[in-house]
Image (cartoon, rainbow, N blue to C red; front, side, top):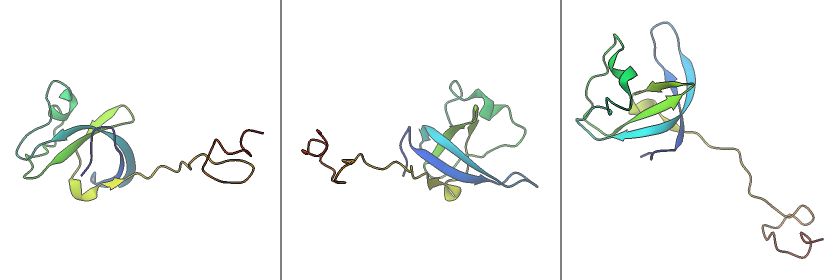
Length: 101
């Protein structure tokens, strides 16, 4: 399960074009509901209809566009951030004597 603000990745399944996309969860959509029409009007103007879902789904914002992909195609995007460590001894205690030098 994802929450608003989570970063995810998925592969688009547009006919003839498979593309890896990254985005941020903009809305958690309850089962048997549609995304908020006022917040995501572009989801209602496309010729291809994304039918109602019988499970929780998610709207994503990516590259200035909104997407409502199938949940089975989603993966959490792991950020490659390392915790800050003391540059002298490598410990995680940023108040250690080495760090204060």
